[in-house]
Image 1 (spheres, rainbow, N blue to C red):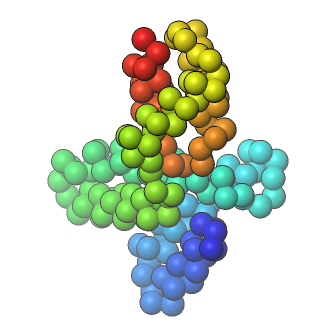
Image 2 (tube, rainbow, N blue to C red; image 1 turned 90 degrees about the vertical axis):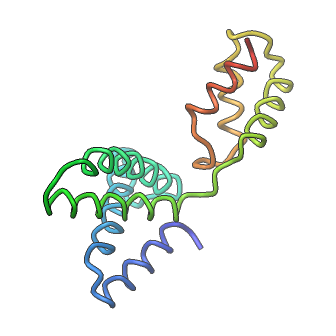
Length: 152
């Protein structure tokens, strides 16, 4: 079942049980995916658009959690709870992340296939890595740090 189908099913279930915070969070993910698709001049969001939307919403909710966790008052508490719910939902729907060992093994495979030997070849290695691994299963920042440490 695709991420879109899972989210659609969960939206319907949340609406049936009148779980307003869950419904709002799920709809915000769908809305972000639709926005990403429209930026690409596409009518319907693809699986990759949903992965991008989930990554964006996860990053945004993590920042919101940091902001609201130290603020007093009921509004901050409600916003903290909403951000925490959105963060949990994003983790639920995102593909499982690659382990550090898997990332390093894949990087070494990409380096050997590209013949990279120095930092000048980092872009080549990163391009091969991104094209050979499923989107959403790795953090590009972590991958680039590991490539940098291996090539130096």
